[in-house]
Length: 379
Ligand code: CAA
Image 1 (cartoon, rainbow, N blue to C red):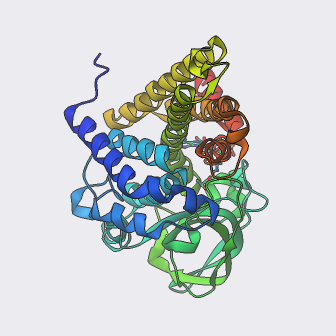
Image 2 (image 1 turned 30 degrees about the horizontal axis):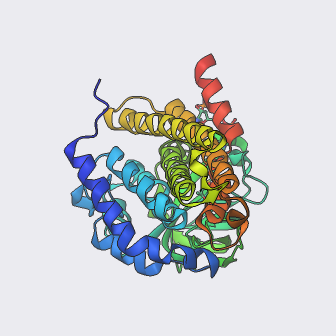
């Protein structure tokens, strides 16, 4: 067992860190506060070949492994969780189903522009009445000649306002339950597709999230992804990989909370000495560092399982569960260490505190992660 990252992994971490120092950190506060979508960063990420990291070069990807991708997400999130989630939804949630279930033609037409960063991808599963109970969606798709006609409303859809392509899940045969759900490739601009306005979120405010409305939305027959009735399986398998991505996002947030706390503990003087000399602070820092490292091991292990072709559903759920709850605890501690200043808008500790919470919710809540882990144990 070797706990060291390979030279290639160390190099990619170094490259992303430098990229973040130059382009992401300087605008992260503004992206959160305005809020605004960091379009200029996304363009630069495409130039670095970081918008299709785990996909083959023949489809415009970087042809790297999943761990490389996870390291990129971790470092992006350490700088700006909004930028991280934009890349994560695009790569894990839109890229994966196209790569894994797309025909050669679909991959050339839709995956390649995503990997090249010519457009962004989005994943539309959640509905007003179908969040954790993902199978309860009421969006329908009916075949009419050479076209599928989609009707329904999706909500909380990350990247939807900037996406060139959406992976949409809809019921094609209600009588078959989860086996009646199918996945579709819906290009932006499809007739009958309407993107709602940006939702005003507590955190990750620079990432765009909206409702998606489909009213007699017509797409070509060949835009069915995978077989008819395969949609639920496609969604679940996509989320298994995505959850490693959210674990990486949470890890980056927790590491940033630790970074900020260490720095502030050295600078802030009370009782005539830096607060870092007080045992109360030292114990908080020690707990934070331990939990961050444990999150990293779980997250990297899940990515390693993915790369080795081993089962990774439970590993991904464990990594997301632990890393997201760690992020919430660590950002709470970071605000506590910063005291009053950590409660003021514009400090990084305050932003991290708000950004952390969503990692316990999206791509499956902590409760769903426990369901998946327990399901694996009792199978
Ligand atoms: N891989 C492959 N197949 C899977 C699977 C997986 N990981 N998980 C389940 N399935 C299959 C099952 O084997 C079963 O198939 P059979 O009928 O052939 O046995 C079928 O799917 C149904 O499985 P369940 O009975 O377990 O399904 P369920 O309805 O009880 O749901 C659940 C289980 C785990 C709660 C699931 O609904 C779930 O994961 N919910 C959370 C949804 C979620 O994560 N949403 C996130 C939205 S996207 C997002 O957040 C994006 C963003 O903004 C960042």
